[in-house]
Amino acid sequence: MPSLSPGDRIRLRRLLSVLIFFLITGIGVFYYNRHKEDFQLITTVSVSALVILFFLRLTLVLCYGFQVKILTDHYNLDLGFSQWFGLSRLTNFTNLLLPLGGGTSVKAVYLKRFHNLRYSSFIASNAIGSIIKILIISLFSSILLFFLGGRSGMLLLTITGAVFTGTLTFLFLAHGIRRYLPPSLGYLKTIIEEWRLIRKDHKTIMKLIILNCFVFITFSLEIYTAYRVFSIKVSPVPSGVIASFTMFSGVLHLVPAGLGVTEAVFLAISTVCSLGINAGLHVALLRRVIGTVLTLVFAPFFAHKLLQQAHKAREINENPSSHL
Image (tube, rainbow, N blue to C red):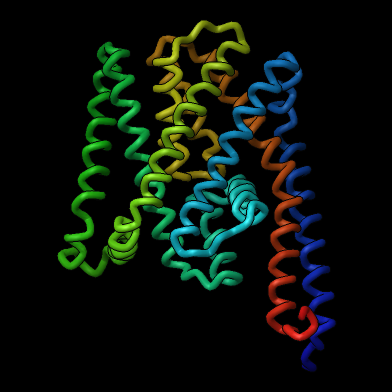
């Protein structure tokens, strides 16, 4: 089979980026048609309330993208906005379809392909980011559950307290136990090896801690606002507790986009907080619809943008003289 000329390869890549744009758009339309009845919930909410909720969710979306920026800055990649934000949205779109954090693999493959960042390094650093997130969530939730009280609250406090102690112990001691782990725990060894390097980068760690504190506060405010939209009185404490356990379920990525799992956790904690199942269901669905709308709006555009940038970088590498 004859090899393609540089010009043909460039045209092929451009065609591929356009095809991917339309493919993602088509999948988005298909997803909307399959879940149209959920999206109709938006029509029952006032415009002013929707603006506030969209703003809060957009803030969270930017934060999730900025975590990509923080982690990649550790490797001196210096990604631009369209890259770190675009990778975050493409990841979220992929998670609508694939379980177990399939979107993380998309980020890792892109960064390996176009920025020469080792696949294992990014996967491990992303896991470390999740561990720090769990640490912050469990700390906040433990404090809030202490004030919430009640038998169920104390049981949840025991769980979050154990999670906080476990993650804190891991971050303090993991770098010294790698050699004692059996070969079957290769993935854990990779995370620990990456942690041995990242733990010395105090600037990155502090940024991750501050970012996750801000995410937790914004997430709690979003849930508080969503309940108020349906005229349900709720205080900051149960809003924060619901936020923390919803974030816990989001970290696990057991099913595509946490579909069903996130709602189940949301309803269970809403019941513990005496807010009712029906109210919790409406709030959970409203949050998912708003988040999905933002994903379907941003993902096709930024997927196209990422491919354009990747192709441009490759063109420069293949034909450096033409860009002088």
